[in-house]
Length: 230
Image (cartoon, rainbow, N blue to C red; front, side, top):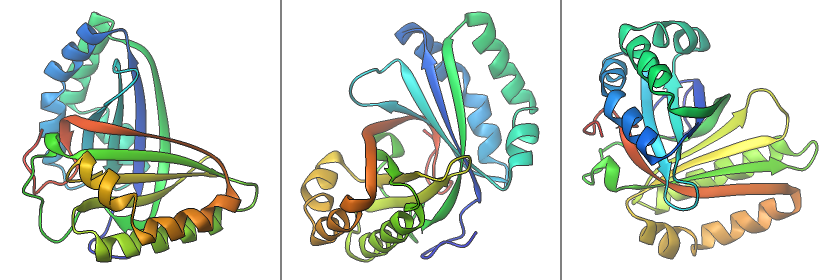
């Protein structure tokens, strides 16, 4: 689909929630996923493949953000690549994982990157993911407010590097905001205190049933192929 702003975004996005069995298992996964990252960074069907680790709370888990041309590529070509098969064998033989939850989303608009790549390395950027649940029948309205907010952010906040609005494919209530900033300080002191944010909060408050959000750091992978792979 075409974004409302700078570039076309891949229409099939996956959030893979991985709960590992501890910090030693995290190390194994990060040390062995490199060939998968390299392979996908060379594929035109893939825009993003990035392992994100929470900055607070349970740090023995990952959220993997993946963006592809379509479901067939994600489920077949990606998973059947030699690099991914080798990684999967390491994961299985090392017994790294406690659970895996894969959820599919469709981008509705926003921007994953800007016209110029950021100078700050991906690993030093601050990533914020918000899962929003609309009141019954209000998801389209919530998406509309989020897209307006994304447009305002794109226009007024140069250090907001990504702001993608996605809807969950298998329910009628969930909306996800995938956000990326030059720093947590910018997120806290500029983005969250802006007039745009205050208006957005006022708009969505009456139609928001639940919200779950947290900050992440990129540990391995890429969100923008113009940047160095983490």
